[in-house]
Length: 448
Image (cartoon, rainbow, N blue to C red; front, side, top):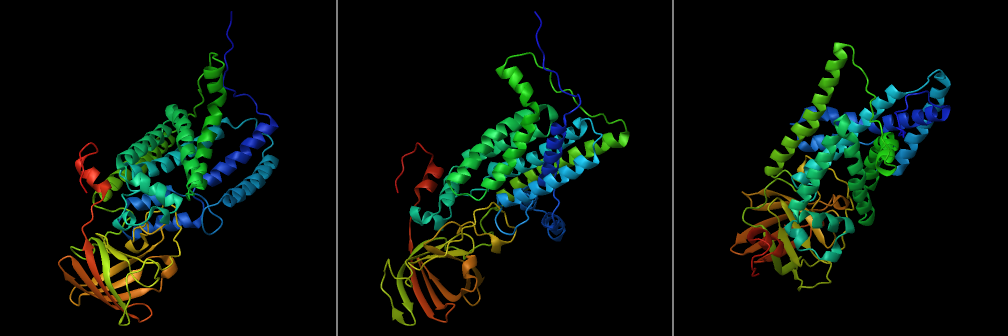
């Protein structure tokens, strides 16, 4: 009794197969390779300051954009139209081609490395919990219902850094599997499952990366299609199946050395160097929160015991849009004020790691009920210059004189409308269950 064995198909392709390949080869080529000016602007800007892990992440996070603003599937539509036009021209110009096995191999190589770079980039910022940091004091003192779904998801991931690190390790392993031809299909298979869950969570929590996560999934599916027939034959039909034996030959020395040099560079830059930079800078506190230190010894939450505006005292009120209710000083140079004054929400929920402190707005993104201010300290004059961090309030600035006494801070000065402001802040000795559990361990008895 003889067994039927599925052999790799290296015979002549049909006209339909050739056109479909031309279409998707061009589509993938445009989607995977950096061809727009924005990418090269980011690349050349690396020479203007020391290299940070955020620079490498932002490069690895590339996807082609033809429209300003948030990423959308409209960009995919433009890419498809360009690819379709190119495939038609290619079909007219290249009627003699019998098959594209060699070119198909190289397209898959491009996809493998592009997908690996994208997955590993996210893996390291999870491994050293940066993507979703532990909630700030202001976040811990914000009502649950004052966060967007995306921010709640991010904060929920931030309070379990060990789980976030595990997810990052999984992504790194999947990315490394893609860097080697023999294990690429395994990596692609797990990426479809893992990143598919990321895609669904982005939809459910209204995250800003549903387009990008599907972008990565489409690359993984492209890789799986090539081996799908053999996988089906082996695992489902349980037939003897030939492995993929197609491999290009590098007859010239320069071809061999170039291949080795390019692979070595990618592994060094996007795995070793990026991993080292991410670890060292995260240990030094370079995360999504600002790095400039705040007013010494003031970190905590303060009740606003007394508040005056233009010499008119305003009693404590939950509904007054002017009267401050409480003030939070972070360890860094951020101060947040809670009042009933409306907040135009900063709804940015796209992963980007800024180098400049002024652009680090994670703490206020996706939240209302508090206004966030970065401040500069004039220690000689005991002055704080506050600038509203929300991009919707760029012109809001306060200049306040501070007087610090034990458990009390007095602020006085003028706001953006030249109103005189006077506030007495009493520090609240508040403990947070999340922090106490982290210090003492989950199974220990706690007293708050």
